[in-house]
Length: 182
Image (cartoon, rainbow, N blue to C red):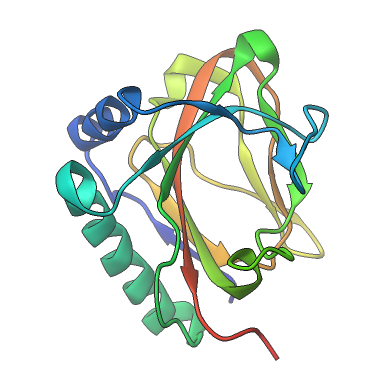
């Protein structure tokens, strides 16, 4: 099994709080792929939350959720969380999306990613399109859109965010790390 669902990781109020924390941060274009702007691959605005200070409770909850998923579904060698929390906003006015990709890359940190956790921050009735899909090889899994729900999956799995056609979808993503897969 390479996916693990967490139907109510955060409450609606907590999701609003996470979005509020991200509003004070600089938003960058999420279209960088290999250091080059690639809006045909990804079109989003991203901000980063520190794992200390006001967002420490968010990171604590994420770490607990990944630990549970790892115990129950993966049994990966996870040793740390080396990256900050990422809040992404996919806007329908820009056809926000992220084409098929995996989260393991060639970067000095990305090459050590083990499990990815994505949490739905927006109420599902505030946008159309924007679904998170995971390629399971013989079928495509659509991830539940309930606000506060999360999914943990192996970082090597192909996944995408289909274009948002109305409104905006916000999500919280974090990666866990450990020795390279062998």
